[in-house]
Image (tube, helix red, strand yellow):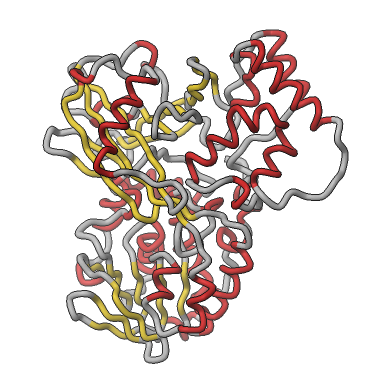
Length: 464
């Protein structure tokens, strides 16, 4: 099998974590017969970072670095060495004019008494129900697992703000590692002891680059590739799968034997000659993410001094998450003695519109309404970035759509992987994404099964 692949020309589309992972693994194995094309002038994809005109560094969202893979950890160590900062996660929910520690369900003792009792009654109610049919939607899963109180107060409104689709239109097969479930006895004990319970989740500790933001990781990995293998400013406009020919917006064409695509699979099919797949691809759903970075003068307020990120389920602000980005590294601001910074994320979809003309004003008003900032006068820099494909929605029937699409693609030696190539949110973190590229190369060369793409539940059950 290895000799067969060595005889093939491999083209990779996209220099995000997945494409770079595939290219890096090929390089590790001494294979040079590949080309990597990136539509932007930089590497990193959704994990890229930018520096604005005032010297603030910004990520495309609130990225943090943690992993389920020894391979990934070792590569990260090799890329940045001692240039990592390590953090204990401090995540919160801003709700009912107060901060509640994350995970919310474990800390309902922080709520006003009426809402706490509503949540507790709901938890007790679901604990008494045995069996029943398995939920098919996220809304049903939330109500069945957390009760009506937590569903109404937090999980349903928050998930709408994140996904930009109602939870009744989202599947629930992805939820295993993403939403903590319930230990009723422990929750009651937390109420009685007034105890904050904050350790759940795979990102309870994480690390972050000292300088350059998350994008520094991927810049360094891209820089390790031979110069003649990576090509920037190459936007795909047409893929002829029958002729194995790829066309770019600048008129350049290239042929391939094997195509590894990390572009959104619906966009790949739309620009291909696979007409029979287009109706299925049109069923796919995703949200757009608007990222607003706000640079502020002064020191981070005491109320935010140790916080990492905060969730916002209520509608007194447009953002669903705020990250105190200057807390991740002092190098994220021009001078840590004089400035601090916040990253805010706002979702958009056909059922949740965003007026981009007023986006910044609405974000600033939301910062004031939620008490994240005290005055507009403290703002010294505002940065905006829109990711048209922000979240791959786990829409109802997702697997029934994605599976057949990828089966046809693979018959034509096209392998669609990555956050939007695989369309599996449950394995779309940076570590998952890079390993999708690495594992695909291992499969092509050594016939080793891909774990991340095919078995997300096994990968995510691994202890860190």
